[in-house]
Image (cartoon, rainbow, N blue to C red):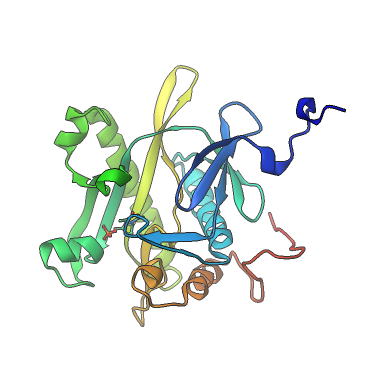
Length: 265
Ligand code: TMP
């Protein structure tokens, strides 16, 4: 029997399309789809710092599913189709626009460093920033002028991306405020999705505590990846707390996903 010609492809033999720092993309079951797999790897400072944190991928898969499903429901277009299992979700294949779109509501991180504004200062209004997605260059901040001059996105696309960013920020701010969490800032990515001959910009990648700053409203405790970046410890506990407050991980459920676990749909 020739196993190589068999129509059966075991999970581990799926075609790997792309491997990033925290996720892997595999070929999907139908043309135009991909499978997004969440790893347990945590990196910071352009992967100079790296650790495997057991359970992180499972938590981010669940939290990102929750956010993207809600965005779809309120009419914000995304690449998300559905979650498949503890670590994977089915997504639409899009052409990723090489920009990290950061929305800030409260001063923190690189904004505080660059402009000397104390962390925790409420900003006069939400601020959108663009970073060019390029690890070799350390994701430098860029302006709309750079983006249009170098053809990464058109002026119309920048308008669409900013409109999406504002809608996502409004939704996320309300969602987290409702569970006692302040959305300080977040990063999102976008992609071009073609349906027949029509192209639209959709939210892509993930939205999770890896890509947001989330502070407890009362204690200001950090419930996001700054726990790893700043060596504070307790990352899985913090992400589990976020999942629990959102009502997506019940008491006693273990994020590790070892052994048979009932997957609720
Ligand atoms: P920053 O203050 O370090 O510029 O980060 C702004 C937001 O973007 C913060 O919520 C963390 C997120 N972020 C990423 O998701 N990926 C990155 O590579 C960086 C630098 C930040």
